[in-house]
Length: 112
Image (cartoon, rainbow, N blue to C red; front, top):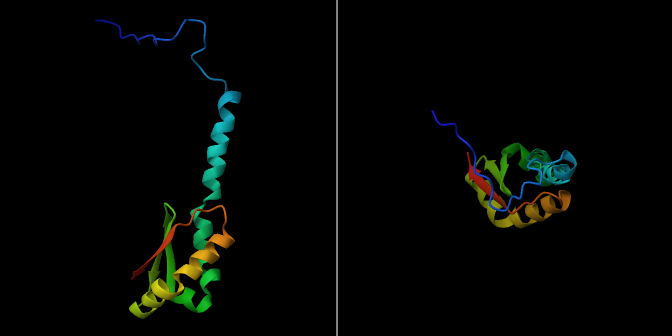
């Protein structure tokens, strides 16, 4: 049975290390982790009731926040029409002002 061996990289001269030191890769890993914590979706969902007010919050539910789009469930078609046509811009501006580190691109309202 033939033993499997890995091919030596083309530019490898035999003097460089093939492993990485933790101090070399830690800064880039920590930057990516802190960037993902800044866009925490639970913050966007938690702020929803404060942004729209208690009356509208009782009739809506901020369901998910994914890829910069906030998905909101609305109880009826009248409220859907009011929120999607009249108040969407104001709500987006308020959310962006309250959470400047979160990238909020759009809000999608759905009846349900």
